[in-house]
Length: 249
Image 1 (tube, helix red, strand yellow):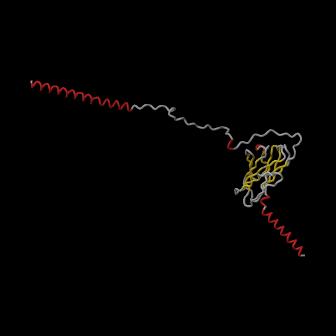
Image 2: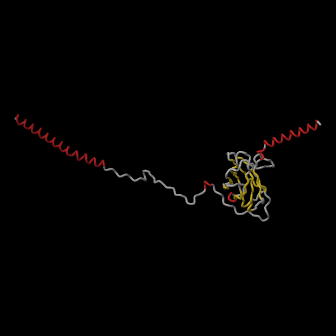
Image 3: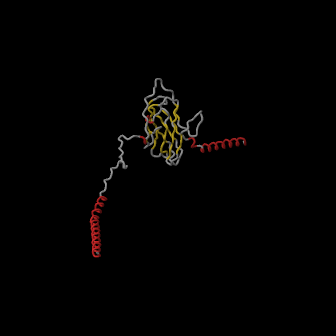
């Protein structure tokens, strides 16, 4: 009887410990899942479904940034279904689905249509999951050698291509929004050069010339008067000397 009670207590204790560990590690089980209706290499018009599990009970998911695997161009992906108000924005290496924050604790499910799946065995869709409080979950680790990473990227396994299936022509690359050229570029106004070589020579001022003329014209009577005074003085001195000599003689 005592042995039975001891066994029951041991089993119960182990169960409680396992339950506590499971609750403590609960967020680690959250991740992003992916599946497709026709997961086959070179299949066309494939609908790929994603489910991003919520970790937070206080903040809702606002966006999912996805880096596309090699062989899928951003222009080949369109949003087929998603939360109300959410849209898809292509980027150079993938896309972002975003919109109003979902209810805290609620998973985000959405679907995209891919023009054609590449000829591969598996496709990893690295995902950044952002919440309304700014927290970001990075589901970007690709499982290798059977190991299970802490933050695994969603991986889609593909069946071999159907006989006769061939790749379609690639889609054009989606340019970066900042690098998108304007359809009608606006001409940039140019400012004329203001260098000394290009600027016209200023017209010479005539004021100094006029002042010089005025000075010379006003000085002329003075000079004449001075000459006349000197001549008169010289004449007067000559007359006085002559008279003195005459008187003495």
